[in-house]
Image (cartoon, rainbow, N blue to C red; front, side, top):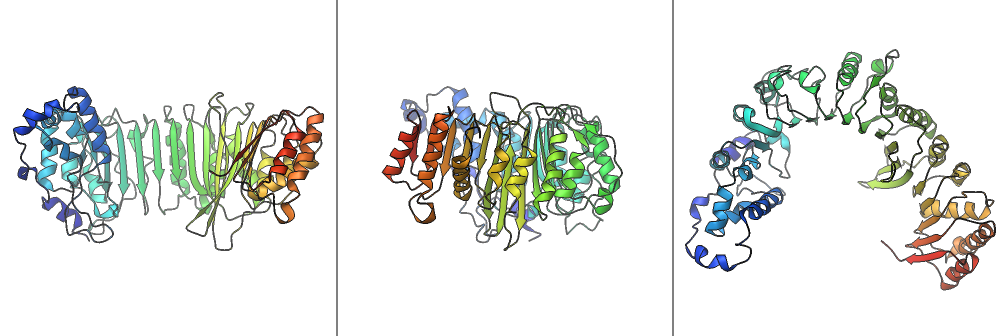
Length: 528
């Protein structure tokens, strides 16, 4: 396996020298409207095609299910006719934006692309093949030699490769590194990324976007001087725990990134780091999106240390192993890190996802609408256990914590909470739309029918999903709902639209609801 990268670079499996562009194409193809398009349009089409049809190798090194039949991909268009070939060859940016290292078609093709790119800024990426990227390591000396003219660099890098990426990269705007400790490298893996990466503080003045990802321990990036001017930073540490000293470095570095707009962190704090005494809050004045992937204790600790503008959105992907009582601390920390909390939250969504048959994920989301620039809170709670269930008080805990947020839209379909959660909505006077599914839909219908007219006075749209109103104990639920709607109508209900999606309803039940509220628009959607 360790020879895969060498084999791919050493074999030219596809060669355009076998393809002949005959003169007939120049005589007859001009009658084709596609051939007569302006060169700028043809070049734009080629650029789009190159992004979706990558050449594939014809090589025995791939074993099922990775084996490829071999294909020239988008390069085929350069063999259609002489005009198309001329357009492609006279467009250096087309070749410059499609450099892959290692090139799956072999060294010959890598040199061909670089030659045809002429002096255009390069975009160098790893091959997008379904294969373990640890075995797709490019030649580090090749990448280093072209840093001065590279605009985008996405590569799989070992310890040795990172040590060689020390040349200045004045044009580089995007750097995406998937780090792996090379098992063939006899040197000791790095504890931190090289401080002179890309030439140090002044070596990459145009760098705006940096992504560092590792399936194993990722060296600490927080001492890098190239971070200061970034607009987006993505640090995904595979398995290494963050100690107290590195945590302090992280907050110090973030405090010196005034232009940062997007931040993604995947990390785990050690118990010693969690016991760190309270430190000054770090302001991130330009941040718009903050995603944090961690456990609940680490999330609370990190969120307590940052202050975001009122227009920011916070998304926490939490490894959830504790009871719903812990949600109060997490939600409070997430809300508190947004500088201004007076603006209402537009939406909360609670939806389940089953992953690999065993994972239960409940998304709790609140975000701003297009018409209003409002704070956003989004959280995903994951439990990986065959016997895991959504905590019985989860929905109620979330709504109770965010009850004062003046919600406008609520969507629930967790199929795991108890029947007490609608009580948390009695203070939701601004709620205009409700979307409910499954068990939660039944619970909400019952609560709406039994509640006084003052319950959700602004509710204008109700959407019910996946409920069978015609069988068993739910057979009378439609009648109960209709009676409750009629009582609300007499008190001046704001409800104008009632939609059933994927529900089983009899015609008589639908007519009963229409009679209950004459101005109510009832829609039946059999499934989506």
